[in-house]
Length: 357
Image 1 (cartoon, rainbow, N blue to C red):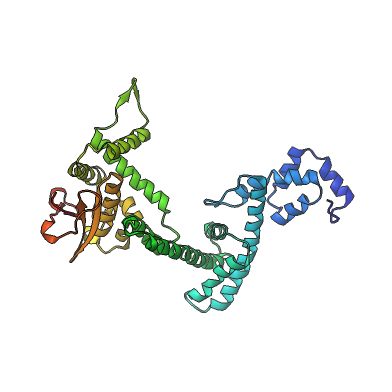
Image 2: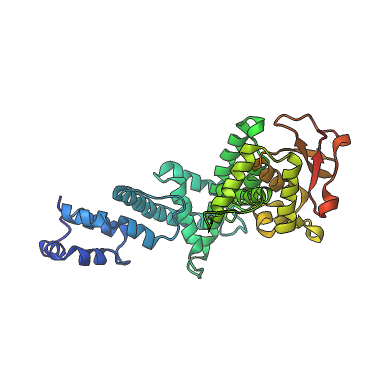
């Protein structure tokens, strides 16, 4: 397993070095992935040395890996090779797009299909391609890379939206009772802000946190055990489990607790004069700013209530988006005569449709 491109004297020098020194040399930024692959082919000893370095090479040379990770040296070696090949391919794609679209102020979606073609023809995973595009966008801008960053942004948005189309289809194929407002609102926010909206799991964690705060409010707050204050996160999760399993709190008590936490403690409110700002329509921004319009506030309210075992259903009344409370999982269809507003006691823009018990 020898590499004839290395002279015997060079090979002897490399093999005579201590492994610690050899590793420092091989981690030099001046050596690219193909260089390391060539060293790796010299002999079994150098192969073992290089293979121990792939994880460090990956983490030190590339900023974003997202959810991608390897558990073995071989997996990291494969990821590094994929990433390097992907970078080379994208350089060619950027040049091609620049040549075709340089006279346009926008990039036609038909031209962006080239990114899908790269995935189909090359052995890249979508995650690797998105990571490379993210790295291009995170590079400090200068005159040399502005064109690449322009097409990297459009390419990343295009690829994310292609994934979202698949997620939309999967959502619509679910039974009606599993098609949650929360998931739909997240997909809308991700579609409109593909490079900035957090993932579904991050938004779900924020909603979990609100539901846990409500549960603690219901059970009377954190308590002491054996003279020690229990871990706050564990207390909140335990409280949420108790509320859902014991069922000792009525629906009205749970709703009152949600109102108290969301509107008194956390300060959620209607958008007021800034009603038509786009941020009011995106669930992640409403969670961040605690300001929204009725439909997004209803989505958050429903998601929190669902985590507490209260089933709410959306009702599209004329000029209003409201929620119906159902007593049990299968409540009757809403009727305007059975609706009252909770806006008065709390002065917020959430309208809740209450059905009599």
